[in-house]
Length: 338
Image (cartoon, rainbow, N blue to C red):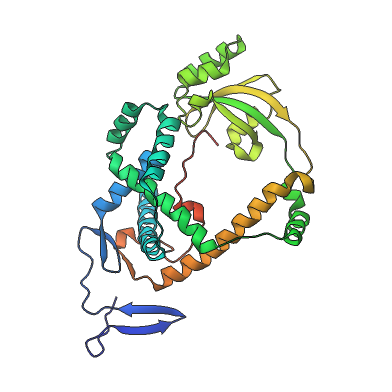
């Protein structure tokens, strides 16, 4: 970037509606830096450390192929930059989270993921090169951002007229497709999957097998329960066998992204037409969330336009100014072959 000096001070220009500030005295990014937000430098090591915390909390993994890793690094840098902008907003708005709230959220996480086995939790942190302090800091950050969203969105209301209009407009989308209530087991090898299928055909209980042998951490402790799923909720190969299996029947082996899948269709739920009374409550929540998201996106877009963000070449995202959905800043994990 060419630097422009005007009377020894920063030159402020309005270009295409965006306030841009050149600091002629600002040095180039240090060699070990991934990005800079204002005067704050984020090193590659600091960015990697945050990614380790996200991996511990949400299972976010860096892709194994070179192209995937490159895209992952650039999006991680963008997320970090936006995170810093949001942290400043949290401070400005006076958003605070009590230590007891962080303690409760951490305890809930350990209970859900490790069955209250604290030693297993601490061991897992070592496996992903992070610490309990880093995880606590990430939990605090997420709780602060949720409170910030409430501040930015304000008191969101949905009128009866808006609700009725949305129902008429989205009626087809609100109809429930055919679904299956499924217990699914994931294993690494096809040979083991075939053995599990034989055991299921012989009358073995799918929930017990899932708890003992499934490698899917998201559903293992639930006995492999996915709950009611539609065809679009599953990857195509798995959906094909699940939706060709009758209620009470076993399916698989079929290969998915995590491994080989076998399971049981507990119940077939037929398609159902939506009624206003039946969907009113959930539709109101959806409309309120959409309004909150619109307020959030507009506010964040304005903050980013004013922020002074610079990326190292290998960390610069393809769309540095794009504003995405709230959920992408409120880390979410995934599980099962969906």
